[in-house]
Length: 303
Ligand code: FAD
Image (tube, rainbow, N blue to C red; front, top):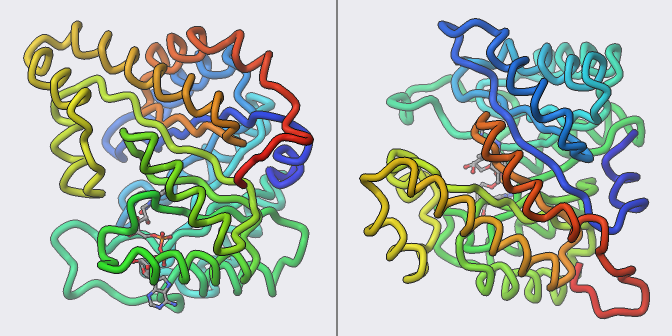
């Protein structure tokens, strides 16, 4: 089923993101994760596309298995980095031949350490990939895009960023998934701005449970997410106690999700970091809320 249709059918779309294991790690490792995630009944699982070819070859295979072996709707990430039209067509044909008709179209980032000398592909921005996919495949696929509640890290003007987002949606994006954030109020402000800008596709909130110290350093450098005082206190108190940090990280993410559902968000996208036990605990914490989401008809919903 196309993810566009899942958003139309369901009041709350609950999804997971996984990443392919490094090429030095057996592929089987991801199937152990998927064995556990399957029981949590996500509406779809997305599979990331590694930077600079690192794990790229594994993405279509895993995306296909999510759909066919596990019977879960699958969303394959695809990026512009170093991609030609021919490469992209090859991957999309493989996906379509194997029943995967959902693609998250991203610009991606140059491979680490190769910012200045990587091979540019045929697409510069995500919008170019979206246009290509829509023209080439029409409505046979559902296309998602990335959104940034705090603005994309390279863009110093949030209004400009929103303008580019609106153009990307107009080019054929059916739904958006946001970058992770830790301050729901920033997300709500973004939702308001998106609504005013006329961005009217469903927006899924990206939530990452922070359960290890390394994660934090990477997050702050890579995406510049703001860290609210409440979150910083948790880090200071529990950073050197892995079990306590995991407990606190799960509680914090749960708290964010409870509030987001109360707000009326259309989707929650959990960055699982391939930690199925963390996804299991969060899913269990919100199980009643998933079932009891009120019908948004007649209510003011911002997306
Ligand atoms: P774009 O939409 O192209 O935006 C990038 C920047 O360019 C922004 O600053 C924007 O304001 C600006 N811009 C956009 N259009 C134009 C234009 N026409 N002219 C001038 N400037 C413009 N990365 C991976 O490598 N693999 C993944 O699997 C992956 N999955 C992700 C999943 C999610 C949900 C998210 C939020 C991000 C993911 N990323 C992934 C990271 C993403 O690739 C990076 O954040 C990247 O820097 C931007 O990608 P984008 O698709 O948002 O790019």
